Image (cartoon, rainbow, N blue to C red; front, side, top):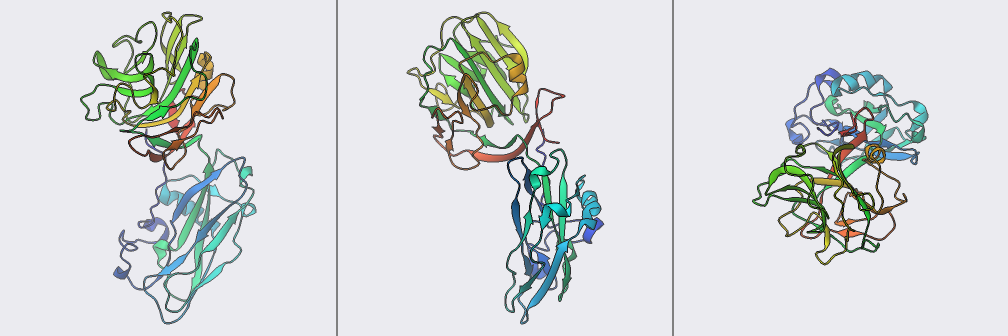
Length: 395
């Protein structure tokens, strides 16, 4: 799945709207005559519609290619009439942001003699929690007057509001792992459910080792992908009663697509179940005895027998439960659950966006930190489409 992004085409905004321009016009300012232009990103699509957020502020600044020996005065204002042209140029379907949702306190700015940049000016947004999250909105802000020629291709900035995705950032944990030093009691669990969202561009990833580890304890209870007896993209769970599913009993995992993995182990009923994207793809009744997640081999995310069995890709929404989650619960909640849900022992969202420390959102204190690296944080827009149980990018 392709990430649903609206590229910041700040250097190549096409002639459909503002006239033609060269991609290197802004990178090398001396390739054109001295003109004034917007220096901020031309398309700002980082404004999210959230019920808990009603206000936001963004800034604009203006610049010359070279300083002048006089001041330059610039006027600007909202330009809702440019909405149709924006949609055509950027292949969008946004509707204009109504005046009730923004204000521009100051609509003129001066670049002083000898300078090349103006001070920042602000656009204030208000009551944005009342916008329809199923729609996209655009506010064009354009230069209306200047006492110097304006670079047409950089005359206008566009502010985009869109519904917040359920997941906006994930962690690439390739070649690193996370030891879990349990604060919760995870000894002798009769029932366990483990869930995780994962994505890889290559399950082999240039390794001689055939395994990719998601979560667990080597030799005790372990969610992993690949093994010597099966393709490297095939899921298996190490658990009491023997590894399951059997080799080639289930399809392999795709590359470059998000997949929600869930395993249920219930010694009270004998059930062992593997769900892929909310669909039961394997089940048996071989569960025998309890599971200990705090054994001497250590419990990890991204590691098992040795450091070579890392997960070659991205991870999100790792959850450990001491109850059996139903098929319906698993199918309906791949992207988020209430962190205070009954039976939820640990909940690592992997949505920090910076650093190496990952919070346990249950409040149980099972926080973890990366070893052998720092996650690469990847911006995404993941939304659940109820017409399909599979994880999907917003589109």
